[in-house]
Amino acid sequence: MRHTLDRDLTADLKTSAEFVVIGSGAGGGVVAQVLAAAGRDVILLEAGPWYEGSDYSNDFWDSMKQLYWDKGLRAMRGRSMIPTMQARCVGGTTTVNSSICFRLPDYVYREWHDPFGLTEYTAEQLEPSFDRTGAFTNIHPTDRELLGRFDLLFESGFAKLGYGSKPIQRNVRGCNGCGLCNQGCPFDAHMGTDRTYVPSAVEHGCRLYANSPVERVLVRGDQVHGVSGTVRDATSGKPKHRFAITAKVVILAGGSMANPVIWKNSGLPDPHGVVGRHLTNHPGIGITSVFPGCTDIGISVPQGFESSDLRSERMMFETLGMPPEVAAVRMPGWGGTYKDLMSRYHNMAMWGVMVRARGEGYVAKGLGSSPKIVYHLHDDDLRLMARALRLITEVAFEAGAEYVIPGVRGVPKVLRTLKEADALLSHPLHPRDMMMIGNHPLGTMRMGDDPSISVVDANAEAHLVKNLHVMDGSIFPTNLGVNPMWSIMAFADYNANKLLTRY
Picture (spheres, rainbow, N blue to C red):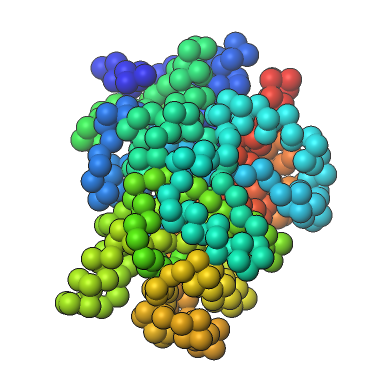
């Protein structure tokens, strides 16, 4: 797989295919494989490079520059700057996430029935697609021998408060718990689409061009005609050749950040101004607790345990791996105080909560290749985060923490008692007071039966451009409240199989 077709080009590329798939992540990788395995003529285009396990770096900051858009520094603007990280490589973010897998909750299906008219989508209807994608990527609960002590402390603390927790389901095979998931797995144990669906698609005849960002979707009248873009050098990133590909069907699967920009750059119709709108996310925030004894942080599965008991209240709690480079950024103080805190790194546990936020935002064309991303937290989201931080702090103390570092401006930098943690609820907080991250961008190309509030219909086909489909997380009308990768793969499988009967 190291040798992708873009490396063979010595001149501009002009060719054709029955299907062109843009993006090789949880959506595009699955779609390409389903189509190719059925004997269809497929070209798969990916903006980033192909990487082998030996190509990844153990250095955290080198990995950010190598694997992520904007060198890992992309952020959503609004009431606060919230980092949001998307991978730029074959496999997309499935290559570098923590392998967390959840089925779509039943309540989300019900929410999509009205006002979006997506009554076709039910848990029963999607179950075969979840089963297929789960088997293809080897999704299973994390083996307990791969867990760190910080996972077991999480389990103990929640149990003492009467809440359940369990090992997270992950798409891995042969995982040894090295803790490098977010930097690319050097052992090829991470079963992202780069190690599963994309190689299978290529084996079935799919033509894969990496380093080939699509710039425009081409149309004739009201029907898609193909795509065009630039092939870039795999090492320098400099433009090498142009490509123009004609196609009967184009599937846009570049993600919630890229899809609206490609649409706008292509001059495609948007009379209701819905393209790029309704960006949703799962803002996450966490605490750092310090315990007696080694917690195995940084040397075990980064995210191995979760508690879903409060999911109905829009909170999902998960353990978090934290490399020392991230700990160094999160620690407060300076001088001797900072040194003393960092000296306890091997005693730390980082636990987080992601909230099913009510805030929304939008994506638009920005400067260069970076989109303009705006996201506004709702005041209710902020109150929920404060409540979640107070609860996870209580969990830490129940588990035996010596002290907790909340990472919130305006409250004590180090909490040594639960009473001190009450400041999280009493202090008037602003989004800028919290160290958040939002790595689950969804929406921007919503699915629905009404063109005035959605971009694609229930078949994931654009309302206003025939034979142009969108198949990734950008079509989800709302956020999910759980990590979205498995849902994206299942929906891609479901809708790709519909393509086989339609075209």
